[in-house]
Amino acid sequence: MGKTLDLFSFNEEVGAGLPLWHPKGAILRKIIEDYLYKELTSQGYQWVVTPHIGKLDLWKSSGHWELFREEMYSPIDIEGDKYELKPMNCPFHVKIYQSKIRS
Image (tube, rainbow, N blue to C red; front, side):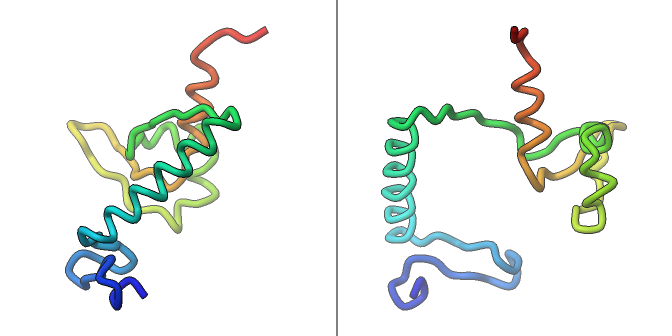
C-alpha cells in the first residue's frame, strides 16, 4: 500500500525495515502523530525524550546487556567510552524517575 500510494519506500542500501518517507507519507505520518499526541495528552500522558544512545555501563547495570546483548548492536567507542544504540527506553525512563526525590 505504501508503494502504491507513494507514501514510503525501502532501499537495500539504507537497510532492511528502514522506511524512506515520501512527501505524502510524511504528511500522513505527521497527521497521525499529531492525533496521537493530542489524544494521549488529553488522557494525562506525560511525554519525555531520551537520547538514541547510552553508555554501555547503563545497559549493564540495568540488566539489559546480559539479557539482550545477542540482539543488540556492537558497542560504539566515542572518545574512549563505550556506547550502545537504544533498543528500548526503560533504563532512560528509570533515570528520569530517579532524578528527583519521591515520598
